[in-house]
Amino acid sequence: MTETWNAGDSGVLRLPSGRLVRGRGLRRPRPAGPTPTYAVHLLGKRPPEVPWEAEWIRWPDFRLPADRAHALTVLREAWKRAAGERVEIACGGGRGRTGTALACLAVLDGVPADRAVEFVRREYDRHAVETPWQKRYVRRFTG
Image 1 (cartoon, rainbow, N blue to C red):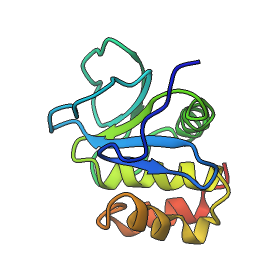
Image 2: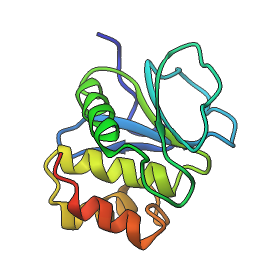
Image 3: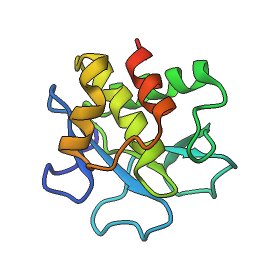
């Protein structure tokens, strides 16, 4: 098993179980330090190739995943892998879609769905989860 992130690393969210997941915006340079072992890219169009394992969820900016069943499968895999790998969740800016996906991981980790957005805003980025429909998606997320 690969080592996970360090809790103090930029953009790293610690879930209640202790799992660490890095959120980031792909429009910014990759943070210094180790590379992810598994990444989930949340973009409206196919992302460029990366030298680590990555999944793509087609998810247009300010919207919701185009295929919610696929999104659920990928987010479950990301949550499982975060127990011992460096998992990164990333969209263009690192707030709306990334925050929404991180809130869904928090639900998978045991945070009540109606508190997951608040958790991610407090622990990751106060501007995370940008739209009313993203908030509603998290509240209805059952994992």
